[in-house]
Image: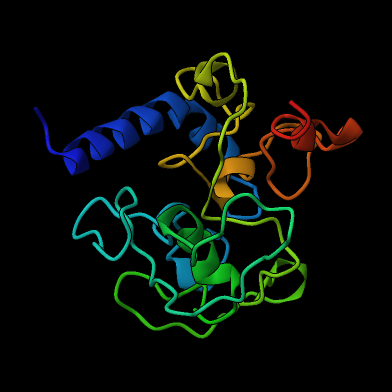
Length: 200
């Protein structure tokens, strides 16, 4: 029997292979294509990923970016059945730029100076954002694969991470479905993204 960490890495590798075509065809020209920035060395992937000497700070594939150490104000509501945790790796990888505490060009062991601004800046107060790092208890779910199949599903599915909703559940950092905004995995027209989980 393989150790859990090995199984998790194999799962990540399979997910990356399944989405490789999407990632290659989508990130160029997207909001996460920093190749035109002088600090990116003209590369698309290196800001977040590296083929060698990857950081072990996050359990993320080939991670190359400095990781936020911020403590976040979490979403709270009397209607929640679960309690959100401080953001875990699949959300911290996003917040490591979008919380505004780590510069975009802080990667590969360098400390940068280019911070996220404007609408892309979420900050450390997540009290008015959809909860992340929160476990979702399915009620009457027939099949996980109907909603969370990553194998050949592209960006139209909403993956969970160790059974939890994370930033990457709704947002695909490498691409977005045509016609969506904010790199979403599904359209918000008719609340399709929300209704994928809520109201089932």
